[in-house]
Image (cartoon, rainbow, N blue to C red; front, side):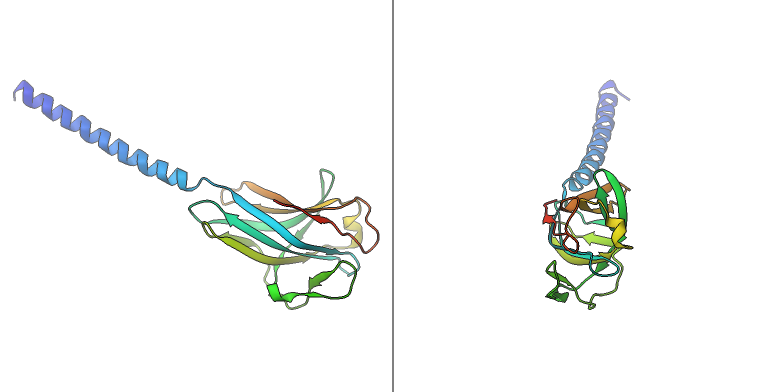
Length: 186
């Protein structure tokens, strides 16, 4: 084998290996870039009514996934805080958009009993689309909310990272029956 043929063969092998490395790197980089982006959310129509037993709350959650791939949130809850201390954690249930109605009670609107009854354990968020879901829940009793000043939506991303966004904030000592917090953006 001549020296020229050997050099050409070595060049072809090195070129082929660099091509394979480039293709694999490109595929991995594309996969990584598709997963970049944020989850955005906004909350509206927050209602906390401590006059009912058990005290109940409802709100509309609007979520947007900026990523190029769908993502899910699991173990979704509403957490009530007093300052930085977690006081109460409540499970969520899906409601119907049409199930909101004026009820003449202080605090405005609440969910009728016409909710799906399905526990909201997870939200699947498609890529590049808004998802709007009425959610509701209740807490054990009025005393468990004593001193609470905000409500936070909590879920976990697929790899376990915690996702939290504030739903509402209110004065520490609201008048009885009127925990009229202000809506906030997430």
